[in-house]
Amino acid sequence: MAQKLQNILNEQTVGGNSKYGFKSTEFMSASEKDRVFDGWKKFVDSGFKRHFFTKIIYEHLHLNFGFIAHYDINGFYATYFEEPDDTTGFIQHIIEDAPTYKFEDYGDINGKMGEYLQSKLSGFQERLGKEQKELDVSRAKALLAKHGLKYGE
Image 1: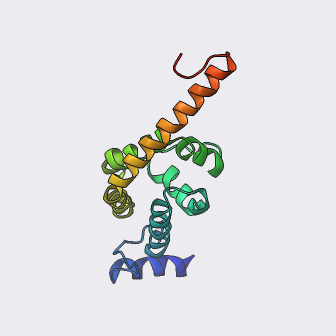
Image 2 (image 1 turned 135 degrees about the vertical axis):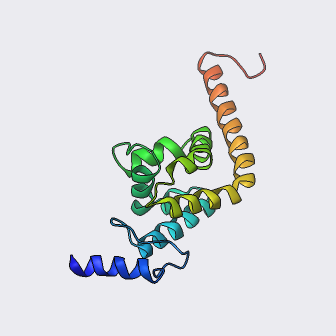
Image 3 (image 1 turned 90 degrees about the vertical axis):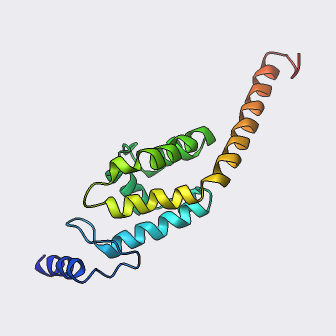
């Protein structure tokens, strides 16, 4: 315990060991923030693929970004990333509401996460809109077929 506290104090006084300039806090070291941010970049760059949605990202989002836990990592992922419209809502929350989640201890990483997502935004919006349209049309056709109707009638 004393060694962990000393490590935190050392990181804060000398600027930490963070490659992004993050500061250590009582509950998250600068190097832990680095790991979260590295994972976040992989997750965003993958187009929000489940494989890259790790526990460390999930924990940071629901503890420090105002998201509820959704029971577990799988429930959280299903809520925000299985439907394109839900992913769009997630993106809007991070980008538009991120400034309100710049709590003193986590403002550095939360701000950087929002900025990184913002830098990738243009490609996501178009892709997600197209995916949602295709999904909606497919569902509409299935409903029409269920009732013996054809598309365009």
